[in-house]
Length: 158
Image (spheres, helix red, strand yellow):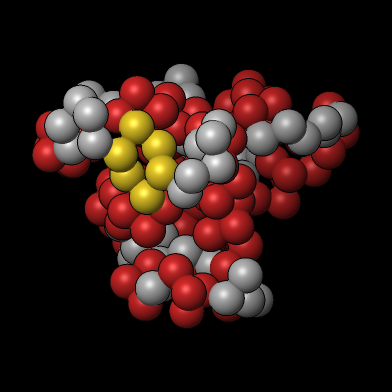
């Protein structure tokens, strides 16, 4: 997929991420018309673990009347507004908070299991331990500081 077709406004997502978001959007675009309605938008946002009651999401949802529909480009714009640029400090912190399911200020084994289950990945106990050993400074939970380091390594290898 050529990201230029999506629009230059969505540079905070990689082509792979845009493709994954497209797949999520398409799951809710049952009729294949390239648009989803308000209820589908809420469900799509929930499937991405975004709080549909947050001020930014509510403002966007209220801007769309109950009979309106949203296209993929608008869907990406909404996600950018909600998540921000993942490469920025604020974007990394937002991503961390989304992955810290139990709000313990650390992404532990339980969080990782849930994340993997949500994205349809099967991961062994040994692989989870390896992931934590590699990324968590204490070997038990990935802190925000650990997450910043991992994201910096990830973005420098792309």
